[in-house]
Image 1 (cartoon, one colour):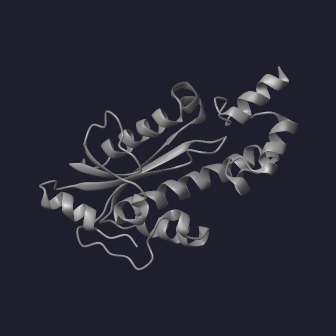
Image 2: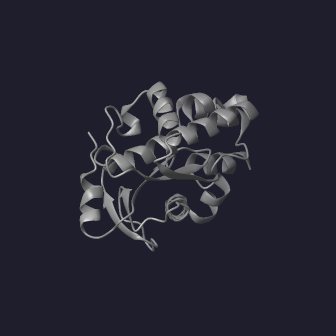
Image 3: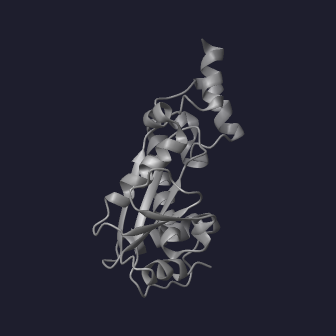
Length: 205
């Protein structure tokens, strides 16, 4: 279960404001990658907050509402659309989203805890934690906000393009999604730099 141990270690080193950063949606063939940054109170604790992948959709929704409506918690979430992902690649788009989310926080963090590997050219002091969403409350909270935000965007996209089933698979390359792509071709929200979509466009050319 997550704790504030990593946040507290940074504070003990002199970093007053510490944020957690996480993303959702690096792997799908469609939709944005969403990145959230969260600053929690120094005394924060929670009985069920965990890595968003370990929780049901209903629990994630409840936690999202709880976190985003708590006046003591500072948070920001950004979405990097498919077009930008195609222009710069998914890794660079994710890193750019992380920079934007962290710098948009008020107060601006002195340091951030990032889920996964270090981010190049990050403008703040960073500590990268592999599986950080199961270790740090701040990263876990960010993972909830990023995941729920992205799921809601994909549900809205399903209303625009019901033939793909975005509300079910969230843009991931499931057999149903690949079959819909083959039948209908890509829509404006598909990532054309991703192999299955790129190959399909070559086949249709």
